[in-house]
Amino acid sequence: MTEARIKVNGKETPISPAAPHTTVLDFLRERGLTGTKEGCAEGECGACSVLVARPGVNKPTDWVAVNACLVPAAALDGQEVITSEGLATVGEPGTPPTLHPVQEEMAVRGGSQCGYCTPGFVCSMASEYYRPDRCAHSDSHADSDSADSTDHEHGPNGFDLHALSGNLCRCTGYRPIRDAAFAVGEPTDEDPLAQRREQAPPAPVATEYTQDDSTFLRKETLAETLRLLRERPDAVVVAGSTDYGVEVNIRSRREGCVVAIDRLPELRELRVESDHIEIGAALTLTEIERRLDGDVPLLAELFPQFASRLIRNSGTLGGNLGTGSPIGDSPPVLLALEASLVLADADGERVVPLAEYFTGYRQSVRRPGELIRAVRIPLPLSPVAAFHKIAKRRFDDISSVAVAFALDIEDGVVRKARIGLGGVAATPIRALATEAALEGKPWSAETVEAAARVLRGEGTPMDDHRASSLYRSAMLGQSLKKLHAQTTEAVSS
Image (cartoon, rainbow, N blue to C red; front, side, top):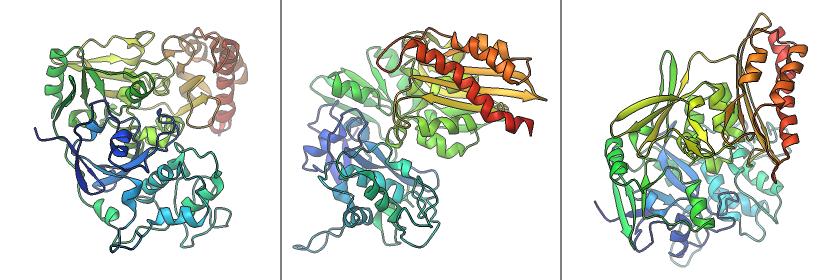
């Protein structure tokens, strides 16, 4: 074991004396890097965004934007971080630094007023700026209203505006920020951060960091981790820390032992076999999205609606399932896909269908010392699929109701129906009665109307600040009618 360190803006920086629960945000600010701001402490505003060097999809390294307010500093032991201060190029002594292209565009296009949120926007924008497969549609630096602009969410420079979905601004307004995003060009060959993408990211390092009777641990292998969890049943397991970080910040959660699994190679594989797809539980949602590249259409519909890009850059399927939340967005989709979970402990592995995994509110069949190693999705996939998320905001919001459909329709008849529901019971559930009401019936307005009445009665929806039980029930029925309206033309043709 070596001293825990993070390379920040090219300089090795010891993590000590920070406590193991100290976030990257606080770690940076305590060292004078105050561009990184705290806005919400929940990963919703993006004022804390920083760049981390991570294994790439199209190049050896990707510069990935993450919420510094959620990630423990100890979790970045041995890794590289770039803050907003590190983007600019330092000149000769006595001369001001040269702004990074994204900083320059934000300045000249009026994308910053009070400036509080600006460093976070800049880091998220820089992550998209360095995305290797960003493909410009025009050589011009056109404004977002020009004929060169492809649509409202993608610029002529290939910039995906969803990269900023986790960043909030309360004074500037988003138009000049969008203009700045759509105006940035391509990185030059001399850009050091662009060059850095061609080299491998830092390899995972074993970490044992202890301060004030609290310990943060990362083992090198899954086997070592599982033995540790058997020895330390009190340990809290973290991957992306998107849930744990909120507990630390908002509820002052302090644990004696935290075990990180996000860098374990056995949990970061994605394999496509003849009869199933296996997705490692510690792959981030962004990594899954880009590596599958639309090959699982139902997941492709889920990802843009799952929180924000900043959260998806850290959050994992294993974490979303492990929390057992009844309003998690991935369980309804995975239930419709008939997914199973590979559970591992020090004695071996077992495979549990997701439909049998949840046993109660935030409870499951997972035993103490057991981890979700992977998610298995059987093949072939049902050809008719849709994910409907009902929430107060279009993006970056918690579901009031989530419904996932996977149907096999042949010759106008529903041969197979799988429907996953979230937000209508103490656990995510399958809509078994509705599936039975559809299977063997014609995919017609009459069948759908009858099945929609059944679907409205599935689960035990409750009244809360997000929605009433009556509204939730109504939305269940409407979601099936919406699917029928969306698919009838495609099926009949």
